[in-house]
Image (cartoon, rainbow, N blue to C red; front, side):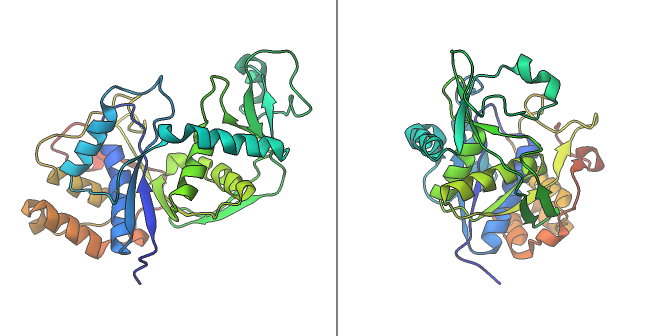
Length: 300
């Protein structure tokens, strides 16, 4: 049954052009929203200026339009809301739910990524401070619409985590949790590489009194070496010519299998079929999908 109250989003970082793995995430979230008659928002997660690539935000929007993935409303830029993020950070500190920390990576290297709580009673010394949020042993549980039941003990892994960085930038977890709430996003469809972020974002939303979203984490696309397609792993930008072969390939990997005659149809017809036949239940319940299983007419 359609749900017109559905609000989904696609939230890329402007660190370079979109690649085939980006398309899979964008297409899945777009089809899930449109199949419900809901809204699909575009948010640019531009909160790390040192990693941003000049012109990437505009290029992302042009690519989405080229592939027929049109969003509702204006594009939301996280960088325009830094003061609101800082207010939330201060709110958590004032409620004794977060605290300053000046532990170095070198000091924490022996703890395998888990924060042991050195600064819970106050940091030693001076210098720049990050802000960490307290985690107790109350489990964070949610049912992922693809990956099934999830159970996390944040106190055990990763321990108290950073919500404001030492270089005075908001951390991803706080920005994502807050913006989803402020934009009234209630359905998040994204790559499974982000599933470990979900309990942290749910934890923050609970602390801040924000309503939680529902999540679906799709498999990520990997290259021939088993590496996730990413800008760091030199994934190729999406082709700028005919978008249909890439869309058909993305639909196939998502378990949707459009009929062969649609491969030469108009872009609107192909996307219309995808919306009408979208089934999240057909998306593989896996962590990774190999692009090499398809004969793609472009490099990934």
